[in-house]
Length: 277
Image (cartoon, rainbow, N blue to C red; front, side):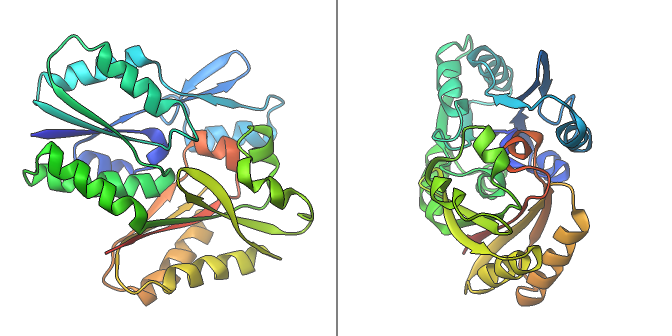
């Protein structure tokens, strides 16, 4: 049996984690001298309260290699193969820490570490598909092959109401080009080859939501969808409902963006992820 491990940036809903027996390793959020485990001792609600009303701007960090080694060793007592699927190594040091963690293991077990080249529920949908197949008896080689084939079939678009948080967190990268005339504009970003890129600019939040809906609707064969939000669940539910009317038989997962991601996007993030069939 293969056991699946991922990080908290995958934004997997808790009920999915439980049902598919996925192990989630939290990244860290730092407010000054205080360090929190993402979603373990810092909920999304508490995080956004601190982000909007606190005086200290947060930072984020990857788990230590030692923590990965401990998790892998614990799982090695229950299985003989482990598959770790993590956030893009171009966005986080998590993947590299996981690789180092494998070298520190005390137990014998076959462990494969994969760079999803994605984040949020793009990474999450990939992990879910692998976990379902693992529970059905698929072996490690089959799962890694499936993942590499599916990475190009996953499409993420994220609407922000400001680039301020990305700039503060140093994750601006290719999005720098958008920084110019951004007054009263809602940037929409994508993730490709592991990094964020500017996808569109629209003039209002309503237009941004329309854009996300149209983006998702243009795909022909869709296996799964996800809609994510920071603080505005009603907005996300409304978008999910609109998309569901286009794809009535496709599962749509509603998910809350993790504090680690929220550090770089701000509270008013809204995203849609499409996994092509």
